[in-house]
Image 1 (cartoon, rainbow, N blue to C red):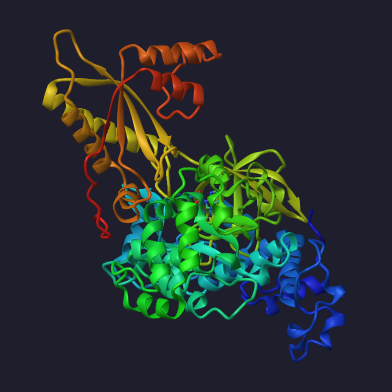
Image 2 (image 1 turned 60 degrees about the horizontal axis):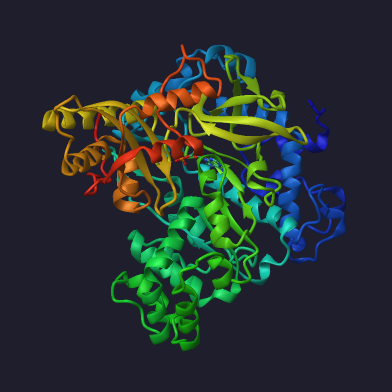
Length: 632
Ligand code: AMP
């Protein structure tokens, strides 16, 4: 696995922080002459540039594929050099000085002196940076902004520090996606992508740094807004529509553009499956208005954003025929295959359906008539990790190849404690991912559990198994067991106060049969003889009380993104949880160790619970949410 580094590789790998594909590649001897003036960029693909991954679609792709080859062939060297570079660069930071590395930049010293940490361990440093301390606390380079993770700490989004150049590193990973996709789906330069992309609200920390989700940061950057024209990466959505902070206006205009240009659309996507389903739901609710706009050639008056109105005035022209077509397709009850009916040239869906998003696969299959679903990359606010080198594989078989140039990676074997190197993980084993980033996270637990499925050269490929401690998730919300417990406790207090009733047992279920999906809580109540059942009104307020208790990402999904529906309590009849235990024991659970599962998703169990429901109650209002963070 430890490939001896030949001179050629030494050259390219000596500076893993270099962020341009060209500087990563020492041009091969045969190319050196002809590419001196970069003329090669415009030349036809030279067969000598062929990549082990397959024949590239164009010269630019050839470079990207070669980059992937170089990095994965030399994964260990890249990792070694990259860590040394981070440690050299950040040697004088307050955090690293604390561990007395004495100038050492090697992996053994680093691992022996620095602890593996979680967000909570870094909270004081992060708070100081957020409050305006500009001294080099975590990173020698100034923290340019905070990326707000969908992972929470004390109910609020985690704040991930980032530095300016990380944007280039993320961009570099993006630039590898289409070259890989082009190996599998030819002709993507002959049409466009209909992608539903959104910016979310952002705030400033007390010290004045922006705090926003990583994709909002990316879409608002020049890297995205002023991206050079690339025939393989043309979107139907104008930047103005993507950058509009009002989610209704943004979705409306993106959908309208997708409809107007329907025959050009070759791929349909969103970041996560839940987002794409939300777009389909939007079409179900608003097709009639959209068709009216297309018929009249004038934009709905609810779209008030001046830059959207301006750019749509160039795009929107009256088209009676298209308006009729949309009405005809959308007014039928049967929406099976609606995606390919409206966008008949779609070759695949570009959407993440791994991890928590796997629950949406059947619904997406239904709406798309079974189109392939490509999961192209694996990333987080902390760091972008890698990409899927076989993007047309079945969702259940998706593996992500971690790119060794993105950060320094370590892996804690499940049940073990000693972290191993990227190239030393073993096929079939599960690990927790730990990263050390240029922005100053050192040996930081991301919270993801991955299983090794194979290797591409010496870089391992991982199946995303799950995120640690997540019980319920519909969109970007993640609720863990203790958060759910707290929410049930708060609602129980209300129940007790109003009618003296207690919650005897509970479990939960992420119901994705509706769009948007919603949390369902099954409650068995302890109603003593002679006591009255709690009223419907009380139980609906218990739903809202629970929503108020859940973390800010959940409440944002409910309030701002409309990506999670009202929480529901289903009261089940007495004895249901005993039946649940009997069922588990009949399937081999130990009676002594049996614990009520706090979340269920196994169909027979959900069916059992549903068959015992005596009443159902929904949250009657939106919980409270504002973009501002609560201070600790
Ligand atoms: P955030 O920090 O909010 O950007 O969320 C990042 C997390 O989303 C990761 O740590 C994963 O748990 C999850 N995630 C990102 N990409 C994928 C993927 N391709 N498949 C499954 N889960 C993913």
